Image 1 (tube, rainbow, N blue to C red):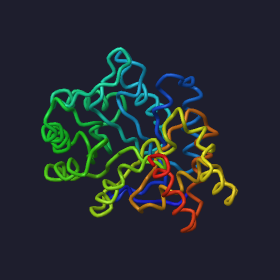
Image 2: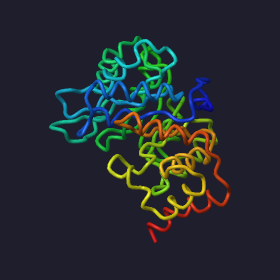
Image 3: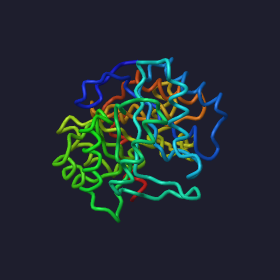
Length: 286
């Protein structure tokens, strides 16, 4: 697989990563099958694995996905696990907690779950409307100064929040939702490109429940046929051609799915293809 840098960090990885969330939430595979999927990703040249302490069923098993990835990758030094803190899962709900004291504890718990002394990339998962954004980001900066994390990132942020965070710490990555159907973070991507910040689009196939059906979109299906590729590969190839700072992180619960996604790294879309794909989101909102 072709390689890219993880923003300005100097870390070299494959052109796409893998999101671990489907391995730990509702409908997840067995641990054995989950580990098999992670190993299939490695065989395709994927070395960046995205997780979070909240990728679990509920608050009784916080860190489930972190522990699973740590087990699957314990003897693979080339693999990089990026994790996040700031979401909580009371009774399975998705809620936010951006308090500095919570983020500190979440980071400590992630260090134990991953079995490492320092987390290579730690991202603030989502701004908490109950807590000043600068306080949450400041807590992440403190963790970095203490050596508990190497690089710091953000997730689910606006351009204004990105700029506010840049005044507090060096932002290595931004992880926002982005795909051909939802291009609402294009302004954030452009700002990331200006500053050499890695942009990790999550839900690159329009979310876990929709990934298998994106071929029903006529434009994606037609372009896929033109290239002898799957619609999923075309959707990821479009993201890759948006900017050299883009690193899609498709989630997968089956080995065959991540193998399929990895094939996108070898596709080259024409200007005509890209223009047609750019128009999909506009068709939906029209």
